[in-house]
Length: 53
Image (cartoon, rainbow, N blue to C red; front, side, top):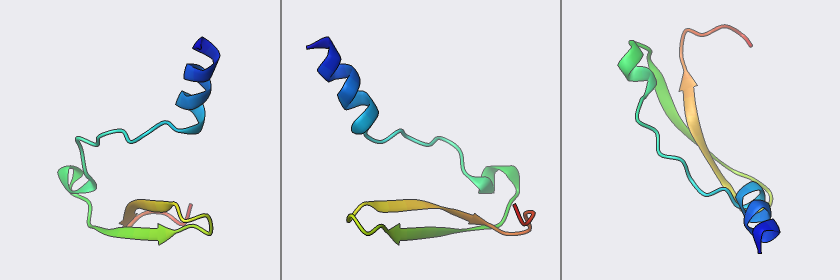
């Protein structure tokens, strides 16, 4: 039972709420969404004016 709980936390972690955005730090950004080959939707920010890293 405990092993399954730990496994599920690592394999299916769920979503973590975000309470901060780049806008709160004076950064220009754009919301981006990508669809992975396995059907997973990835969401994030493209932050303008950053370095090339």
